[in-house]
Structures are given as C-alpha cells and as structure tokens.
Amino acid sequence: MSKIGIIGAMDLEVDQLKSEMAVSEIRTVAGMDFYEGSLEGVSVVIVRCGIGKVNAALCTQILSDLFQVTHIINTGVAGSLNAKLDIGDILISKDALHHDMDVRIFGYRLGEVPQMGFREFPADERMAELARKACEKVNPDINVILGRVVSGDQFISENSVKEKLISEFQGDCAEMEGASIAHGAYLNKIPFVIIRAISDKADNSATMDYPTFEREAAKHSAALVKELIKEI
Ligand code: ADE
Image 1 (tube, rainbow, N blue to C red):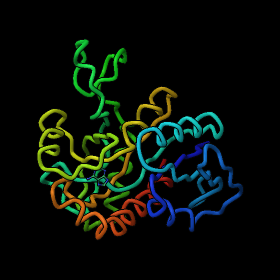
Image 2 (cartoon, protein in one colour; image 1 turned 30 degrees about the vertical axis):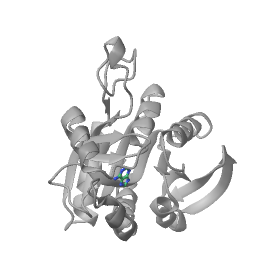
Image 3 (cartoon, helix red, strand yellow; image 1 turned 180 degrees about the vertical axis):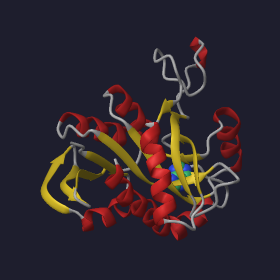
Image 4 (spheres, rainbow, N blue to C red; image 1 turned 90 degrees about the vertical axis):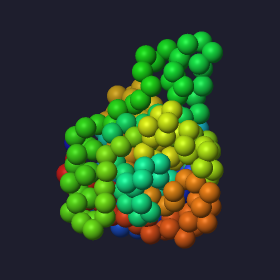
C-alpha cells in the first residue's frame, strides 16, 4: 500500500493540505512536525521542512527511515527561468539538479555531485505524468509544463544569475529544496515528483512579485497534490 510523503518548505505550502487531512499522529523530529494520517483516503505524511537544501535533505531521510514512505511529493513555489512559465503557472519536474555544486576543478560538470556519475536526478515518470493529468483536471485554466528544477541555497533575484541558470543548466524554474529531495529520494530508491507553482520571474522584479503571488501560487500546487495522491 502507498504511503506518500508530502514536503513543503513553508507553512503556506502545506497548511491547506494539513487542514484537510485526518491526523492520526504528529511526531516532531529534527524540529520538523510530521503529520501522519490520511488525505482523500490515502495514507500520507505531511511536513514543513523549512527553507533550503539541508532542511530538505534531512526531512527526506526522516521520511524514508522513520515513516517508510513509498513516494515523495514536493509541493511549493518557484521562480520562473522559462519564458513560457508565467506567474501562477505550474512546473512539474522532469528532473532536478543542484545549481550551487561546483567541483569543475576536478573535471566534474558544473552542478554535478562528484562520484555520482550523472548531474540530473530524474523524477518518477509515472508520477510526473499523473501530476500533469491531475493539473489539467483541477486547474484547467493554468498553464503546466514538464521541466527542470534547479536548486540552490539562494533566492534568485538578479537577471545575470537567472541568465546563468538558463545557459549553464537549461533550468525551467529555480527554488531552494527540490534537488535535495530528489537526491535523498534517489539514494533511498523512493520515486518522487516536484510540483512548483510560479511566484516570480527570478529576476530584478522577484522580490516585489514574490510576496504578492506566493500565497495564490502555493494554493495551485496544493490543489494539484490533493488530486494527484488519489491516482498514485
Ligand atoms: N522560490 C520562489 N521564488 C524563488 C526564487 N526566485 N529563487 C529561489 N527560490 C524561490
């Protein structure tokens, strides 16, 4: 039977889902509250991991070790790196990478974690396709694309940095947790997908747009997650 771990970095990314679930237990580990129970009749563990890659990696390992989740969904918001992704649109991960990993000096590609043999962590194709279908069902007016998540411990708000993330990595959206969740899920052999609604354009306007649109954007990805878990 499936048990789905749902990770959001911030309260607003998981509050809606938590308010709709039937909670059987709340366990606090590493300062994170893990809400165990069911949502839409599906067994879930919902958790706010906090911002950044370390929080996200720890949370993923805890979901694997202590809760034995069978799937992981990361929901939240992101900055757009793709002209086809406007504020309010949704990106579903094809794959994810760490844009702030740089060991080129020893011959690795920018973004490649040494000794892994690859740079991009592929999302589970079935979950990504189910997420796309769920999005078309619950958010029919919202533009959704499948693409690359690039993650780093950095809020992207400068045009020059944005351009680099596009030219170096062909990233479609930038955020601060996805690749760590992908990395942890890969090491623990857990299928995952990242779902991000666009809150800003990851450029000089980002700090203005982000507070205005984050709430609405987070709502879109939460609605999608609720539909998706029924199909997994
Ligand atoms: N999350 C939402 N917008 C972001 C941005 N511009 N950079 C990093 N993380 C984000």
